[in-house]
Amino acid sequence: MLINGTLLSLNLVEAEFTGDFSLKLDSTKGYTQHSRYLKDVTLTGTNNSNVVVNELNNHITDNASTNMAIFTGNSSQYSIDKQANGSTIVTDLVDGRGGKNILVNMEFAQFSDTKKLAELYDLASCLLARLFVLMLRPPWMVHFETQLLQ
Image (cartoon, rainbow, N blue to C red; front, side, top):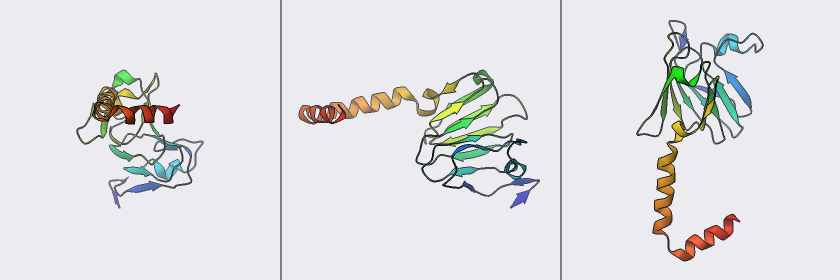
């Protein structure tokens, strides 16, 4: 459904797609004549795929692989807020460029100056949770798991 030139329905990126799916107009990628109007996309399948964000407020959902949201500016030009439900909100502080993007299960955010992981996964919480789980296991189980990983 189009409202004010913006597609407001859920858009699934094909399972076979791999590489960077652009929501921004890119003259080298013909499909962006249409995809630049997309809002709210879900990566499907198991291929490593990335999403180049546009100026709209998007809800981007990851697939079962390693994926990245790609932003235009430097990381200092964005606010990154981890939510209690596990999603991450990345808001472009420059008007009209990148909008407010809700990332669900995305592993990375790429900016023009860096690629970030910790803000998306709250690395400290993940490590503390893993340590807590290990503390609850009997010593023989921890030893067994260690042997399996070697």
